[in-house]
Image 1 (cartoon, rainbow, N blue to C red):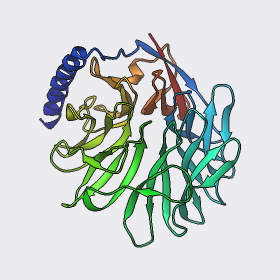
Image 2 (cartoon, helix red, strand yellow):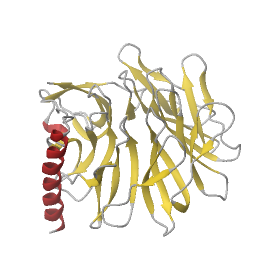
Image 3 (cartoon, helix red, strand yellow):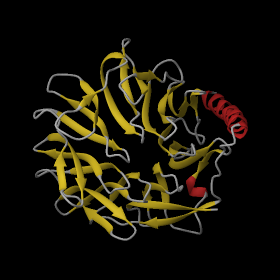
Image 4 (cartoon, rainbow, N blue to C red):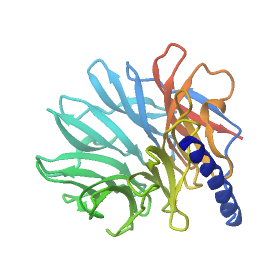
Length: 342
């Protein structure tokens, strides 16, 4: 019964959103199909996290020396970004200038990093003993993420270069986490309220936070934000999880699922096209969503018989390119680029 209620609500939401977006003349087209490219790995399997406006994909891959952050471009292939020490590294985001941010684990301690081709990898200036992760970077090179002094709360930050982090406040609770940032410096992530409950937030260009609320009155988590300040993520919904879209005009809108109990939105572009992962009745699959079409299974939109199965879509750029991961015909985990075909 809960599944039927979520499906009915998702259908009603799609119809109402399509009407609103049509009225605003900003309704985006979803392509008829996607051409799939396997971008390879650094030796073992690889997992992506982001695709920027230049088409660069970042993530991490298993190598003979351990897990390493990578940056991939069509012209240059996959590059091992190294690490800050003797342990693993993972890239989470990049911008059109080729600057990459992520986390490197050094002797068991998580340290945020920033990387570019000219100077290589360096640490974000978090407190020396703190846990630190850099999660998002915008076109101006402003970084967001979170840090924790041992024994203290996690704190979301914004960093524009230099020696000091700009800490963001919380929604009344003790801690928060920065996840995504847009070109205007608006950050989305999760912050605890006074209740305390984790709620998705959007900051303005300063440090004021907007509580995005929740679907069922409990929890929500912000993952990505676009140039319009619209955010996506996921939240509790009737005992399960539902992907959501949020804008100041519409508030938090649940996107439903592809027939299973849970869905998670991971990325959004400037046309308000959303990607993520949803469960069907049998397994997890990657999805693309727009107000015009609702949620679509990416595996049903691949051009030709690829031999791949997409498990999750992680990000989408303004050209409509998607990065995803899944399995090939041998069952190996692969990082994929999906290029729209209209």
